[in-house]
Image (tube, rainbow, N blue to C red):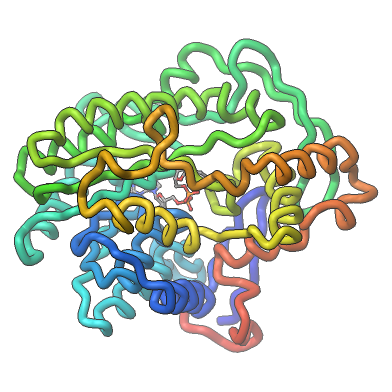
Length: 393
Ligand code: NAD
């Protein structure tokens, strides 16, 4: 069938199999021509999109690592395409296996015991039965508690007072004021339960209990800080609380991992167009301005370049001496240093003050945003014939 993008709000309900495959191929090509020192057996939780997929690609094709990926994607049914991550993971496995790498992709809910058990089984089957690195890159809207079956929902809301700030409707190009009521205590707690460190801790403890973390292993979870304009909705809001919890968890996990000379890190990454970030009010407008400024200054990076810097920072000089990894005063890896550069932020702020529906195309890289958004779903990828019939199974 012919597959076209069907955009509803901030999601696209279709994905193009060949486009998703090509997107993995292009990132793998980048990784191969920009090799990194990386661990040799890597588990990525949240492996089918954005930062998790890029980390997996970089470890495998840039660092020759065997990888296990855990992701949550829909398979195609009838005339409904699968989700982008379904096609991307399948393509990844094929490309990796072609290079002689072990590659297992486990599709299901990472919060569930069933998927945790399946992952342990997969690790057991790789040489040595251990992993050296665990990348935790989940961006989930909800989690079901394993024992109580209670469902926790993650929300993106301010805390304490209502938020009012500029936002853009990416489809219509209309810039308006977003008004969001503050979260109540339950919403804050539930967001922390979903996006905080609980599940990361569970995974690492499980791997330790089963002797599946190799000596000197490390684990990384991703966070975001960003500029003042987004603080009320992000850093100081519900999701920021969850990220703070991630930081506390990194400290706790580092203590637990001392027995294997391991360490847990939080890496603060750059704002990029992904399925997760497009759902956050205000952020798409900020990213459109950021892309404009960073591209003009030749500083723009995508997930794959960030993944390269991540492994370089962790393994480039340290030789598993985790104390020598460059971190900020709170112990966090900062891959957002270019985004947060003073000149970049000053320019973004200036544009932010002036931006409106009338000058959106002139002042921002809204076109670049839209293009990146479509690429997530396998559209607008060079050399793909979107007019041809494609098998979506
Ligand atoms: P994404 O939406 O591109 O990817 C999320 C991944 O999580 C997908 O592979 C998805 O299948 C998986 N996932 C979701 N729920 C799952 C579940 N229940 N079980 C198994 N897998 C599940 O998101 P992203 O933007 O790459 O975000 C990854 C992490 O990076 C998040 O912690 C996010 O906060 C952080 N981060 C993102 C940005 C950004 O701008 N995108 C910036 C800094 C940090």
